[in-house]
Amino acid sequence: MIFFAETQTAGVPEIITSLFPNLPNFIAHVIATIVLVVILSKLMYKPFRKTIKDRRNKINELLSEAVQKQTEANIGVRKAEALLQDAKTESSLIIQTSKVDADIQKTHIISEAHKYADIIKNQAEKDIAQERSKIEAEIKATIVNVAFDAAEQILQTEINKTKNKKIVDDFIENLDK
Picture 1: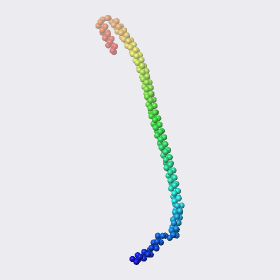
Picture 2 (picture 1 turned 180 degrees about the vertical axis):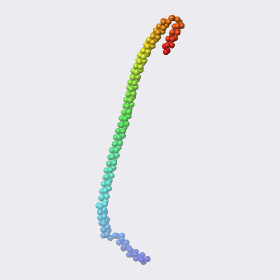
Picture 3 (picture 1 turned 120 degrees about the horizontal axis):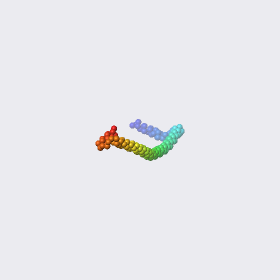
Picture 4 (picture 1 turned 60 degrees about the horizontal axis):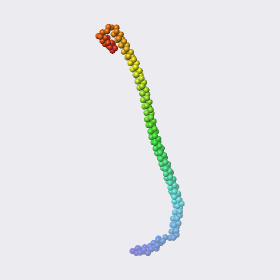
């Protein structure tokens, strides 16, 4: 215990001196800290702050460029959509016009075909009527000639009922040949 007592009495002034530092040492530490802060501020903090400021400006520029380009892209998209809509409208109009034109041409072609068919039909009817008249005239001429031939044969022979009948039957048979 004696050892403990001696340390206690001897340690009190030491603790007090440890609690209250030496004033010149304290001032030297404060000055060194201030010098260190000033040097670090000049060498590190200001360039770091400048770099951060430059980087922030660059990011802001990039963001404003991105916003501008996005705005331009949106305008381009709207223009493209407007052009596409105009093209769709125009193509629809062209299709409708083409359908109407096609219907008009179809009607015109059909009417021309009907006119041409009527002309051909009328010409065919005229040709048939002429052929019929011609054939009828030939048949009449043939009948007249046949009648004359029959009359001539009948007149050349004696008139008798059975002979007349036989001559007519022979004449009719000869017609078929």
